[in-house]
Every structure is written in C-alpha cells, then in structure tokens.
Image 1 (spheres, one colour):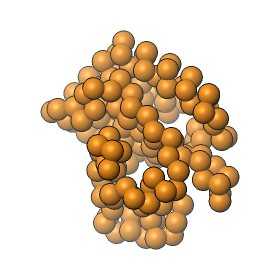
Image 2 (cartoon, helix red, strand yellow):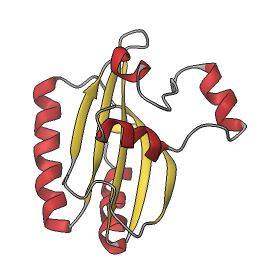
Image 3 (cartoon, rainbow, N blue to C red):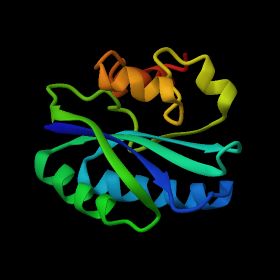
Length: 144
C-alpha cells in the first residue's frame, strides 16, 4: 500500500455545488478502488484562485491508476507532488474521501499551516523546514 500527497491550482473557482459533485464522484470511485484520503479546497480572494491539497492512500496499482487520471485532469494545473511513498497503515481509513472547503481563518489556526502563495513559504520549502503535508492534512482530519 502507498500514498501520494499533492497540491494543485484549480483551473477556475469552484462553487459549492460543483465541489459537492466532484466529491460524490470521487467517493464512489474511491470506494470501488479501495482508496481512502482527504481533499482540501481553498479559494483565495486576494489572488482570485482556488487550490487543492489532497492525500490518497491505497493499493499500489489503484494509486497508480488514480494518479494517471488526476495528473491529466483539466480541472486543475500546476500539480506538485509534496510527498509519496509506502504506508503500512491508512491515515484516513474511515474516509473514501474526506473533504473540507476551507477559508483563511480555518487555515491560520491549523497546525503546520504555511501559505503556499507567500514568499515565506517558498523560502522555508527550499530549506526543507516545512512540516510534511500529511501533518497538515492530519490536523484537518482530527478537526484541530
């Protein structure tokens, strides 16, 4: 079993009903493929763009298959893999796809949050001092 964590920029802003349809489709497909994970969406009004942060975990072949679909999906671009590798135990075992549509207030209080659009984020990232993406996603999973 393995996992992959990535961030991407939404092709355009997504409304609540569009996100609900995306989530419904993802959950059905993930259930069928034995994939679990978490999807976070945030629209940044200052930059007028939306971003996705997602972790997926499951059987190697299933993750490879879903990654091929995700990486060629035209609903987002500038896809950056943050972390990937083998995993002995699922972190999101109860979720076919957990979801959270966050705003700046939610993010500011999350343990390990770093604003992807800030210069400070990229300065820390180049020095390798950021917490792992899984730490951030776990904080959303746990409701911190």
